[in-house]
Image 1 (tube, one colour):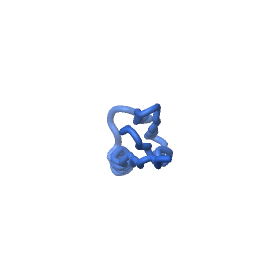
Image 2 (spheres, helix red, strand yellow; image 1 turned 90 degrees about the vertical axis):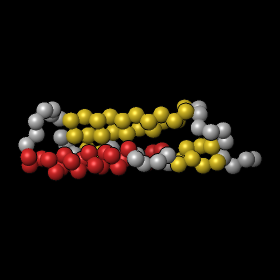
Image 3 (cartoon, rainbow, N blue to C red; image 1 turned 180 degrees about the vertical axis):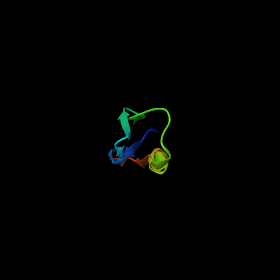
Length: 79
């Protein structure tokens, strides 16, 4: 983080759990470093039936949208 700034609203990252797939984002601040980690798990691997394609695609679109959320920095008030 730049000197004099703080990351805002880090807790608003939401887990996406659709049963067969789960996405868990996490942002942490340690000193002046912001770390983004994400967990992605799938219940099965390999080939998927045609009927699950649209829900599966919607899940990954939601993951992409969640990954694209910006981190807002606010200038700290000087005292």
